[in-house]
Image 1 (cartoon, rainbow, N blue to C red):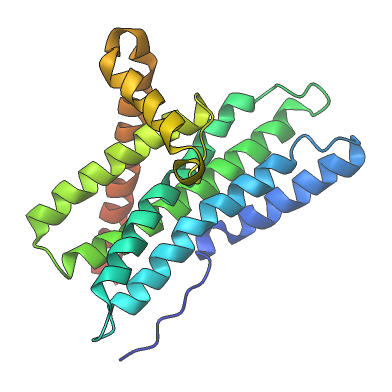
Image 2 (cartoon, rainbow, N blue to C red):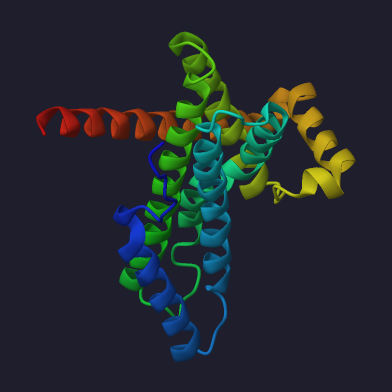
Length: 220
């Protein structure tokens, strides 16, 4: 069996360095720790990628524990929204008046790029795992449901301020908020609109990336 190595996608390495330099540069230059949260968000975005890469690595082994794999996939689903969530941090653009707008744009768009790329690669890992157990049609349905649930998760994180781990520590409160969204849809139109927009955005990004990747490999 060929060795499988988990590494940070090369497409985002320079952006990770740029984000770290800018955040710590802003912290020192402006004597403000405001942007430190972006380092934390990038770290959270890396977790689902790390988990999916290792799940793919171990699912390729002959004696994989199916129960461990299922729990890993469920845990991954809870973590995954943290990756595309970084794109929603654009909402902070221009909030800190100390930082020039063009530097603010560089920082937030770099974080968004990191989050989307980590999310896309992580989705690809999970799709490969599912294809080893299911046919293409079932896998496609599962991918749509995963992206839809993740888009809803981004809404819960951005606007209701829930974190992935809150499902373990405050399950009653988070489930109550989710229930209200479905019981009172007219009062929560923003939840449906946000979920649909992110669903379209993530789906388009993922399948565009897959198409370009396929075309690139076919030319080689």
